[in-house]
Image (cartoon, rainbow, N blue to C red):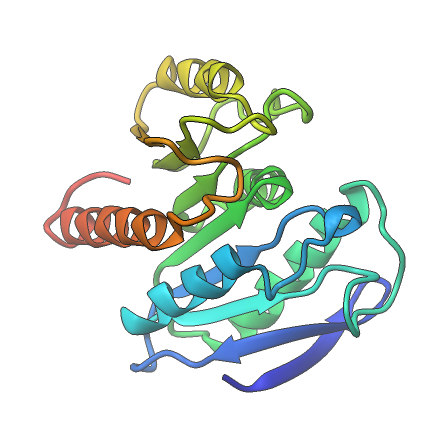
Length: 220
């Protein structure tokens, strides 16, 4: 799990990068929760997602957005963080020029950043959004959502309440050509305390199923 530093819009960005098993390995970028509430690339959900992708041969990057850890700059309420994510994906793609597939995964605040990045990158094959906060952030930019993906959340989440997640899912379901899969983890709160293993297993199962479908000629 090599430590890496690369250039971002506000200076140095700190990350952890695992090369893929093959030169043309798919790539994945992971986006952490809100920095002002303790969100870093070492968040346990982001950490376990990282290894979920590594196990499947992906080239994977998780990183600290500006002002977090050793990343330079200051928190910018999502605007700068999106620029950081774009720079991180550029860096990852530069190292993996032969890769034909890209995935984005985020948790909480990271889903908002990740899905904005998704809109700007048509090459993204799929996404995993964990506990998106539709109640706090504007997701109206998803018009239309360019890729299929998984939205997964906790039944007892009070930070991203199930009814707000449902509003987002319902909106995306109306779009043609994409498939949004929704999963609810029974009894789970926003941080999936005591249920992270179940969460990661579900994400891995979804990723395996989507990748198999795409390999067999299924749609995005």
